[in-house]
Amino acid sequence: MLFESLRFPWAYFANSWAILGGKVDVPTLSGNVQQIPKGVQHGQLLVLRGKGLPKPKPGFLIDHGDQYVRFRVNFPKALNERQRAILEEFAEEEINNENSTYGVGNW
Image (cartoon, rainbow, N blue to C red; front, top):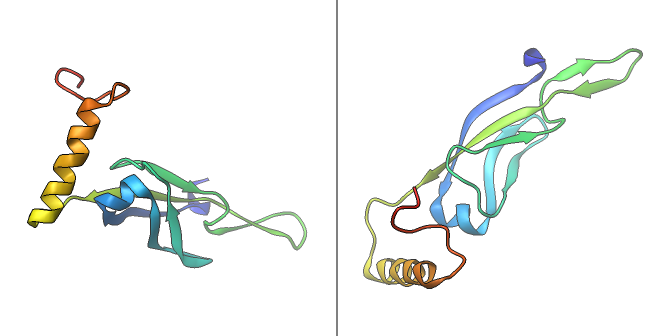
């Protein structure tokens, strides 16, 4: 149910974390840090089961709804020479990889 869910629309983090995974501060009722899965995509929705608002159950037990977090990847506006060289090497490796699904015409 919607009233049992918490929605924090965006979790902002660096593009390298989207590839490698990491931790980001997302406010929840039980703490602030959540793990970013490896390979997360911009706009991807993560459901934190049981991290939402409390909902009463029969008796004295209390259950919790879900919390929804949408990821937003921040891409740098400027790169230094070392960062550019690393990204160019990474891009070349992707192009040369036979299993790559990226390339011209693969939109």
